[in-house]
Structures are given as C-alpha cells and as structure tokens.
Amino acid sequence: MKTPNSSIFRSYAIFFIVSIVLSSCSDNVTRNNPSFQGLKDNVMWRAADSEATVENGALTISGIDAYETLTLRLNSKNEGTYILGVNNGRKATFVDDVNDVPLTFATGINEGDGQVVVTDYDEINMTVTGTFRFNAVNVGDNPLGGAELNFQEGVFYKVPVVIVP
Image 1 (cartoon, helix red, strand yellow):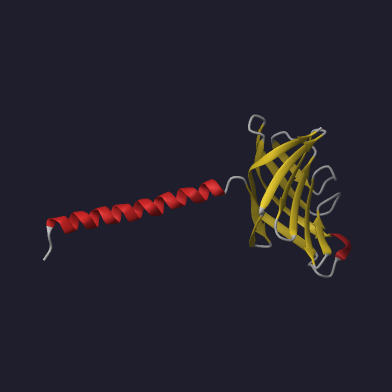
Image 2: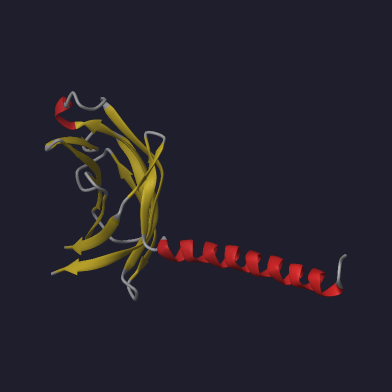
C-alpha cells in the first residue's frame, strides 16, 4: 500500500542523490586549475605539474608527467599568436626519458611547425592561459621514437608564472 509519506520520502531521496552528483561535478572543475594538456599523437596527454617563467621578457611554459616534459618557449610574454618552426626564439620541445635514454622532439629553424596562442597573460594573479598545436621532429633520429611527434588541441590554463630576475 502506498502512503503519502512514502512518495514524499522518495522525492527527497531523489533530490538528495541528484544534489550529490551535481556537487561532485563542480569539484572536478576546481581540481583542473591550473592545467596543461593536449592530444599527443591523438592520445590525451596531461601534465601532472606545470609552471611558467618569464626571463628577460621571454616566456617559457613547462609541464611534466612521470617521464615526460613538454616545454613551450616564446620570445615574449605578450598575448598573441607565435608561429613555431621559424626560429629558436619560439620553440616547442617534448622529452620522453625512456630508460634514462632521452627521446627528444623539437621545433626549430625550418624544423616542425605549429603555433602557440597566448590568450591571457594575467599580471595581477601571475598566470598564463592559451592554446597550442605543433609537429616536432625527432632530434638525433633516436630509434625509440618515430620521425615526428604531433600535438593538437593543446591548452594551458592559468599556469602560474614566476618572474626570474
């Protein structure tokens, strides 16, 4: 037999469960700040830790994972689009330290291509945000890796910036 109290109890139970699920989703967003990630050869790659430094006006954004380091070097901290594969002042480097043998991919003068877009350089909160994509070549033709590495849909979000005197 159905009583009026059981339907009210059921309504409160459903509301309580939905509230818990929705509140747990907002916690995930908080933990993703800062973030440095992208699709590395079509597989999601995410840095466990990231930071940016500014030295002599140049910006370097670095992210590390267990054995991998992704570095984006730009000749300026200003917001804008930076084309890779043109010079060494704007460069992407990815190093995978496999069994203590570094496998390095990089862009450089007429090597690789891509771009980094700095969409927000926040001088008050000292963070940097933007996007990136690039194709980098295997430096030294290390046989442990392919000839080229591709990053696409890359994002760095509110990465903390440290000024180096």
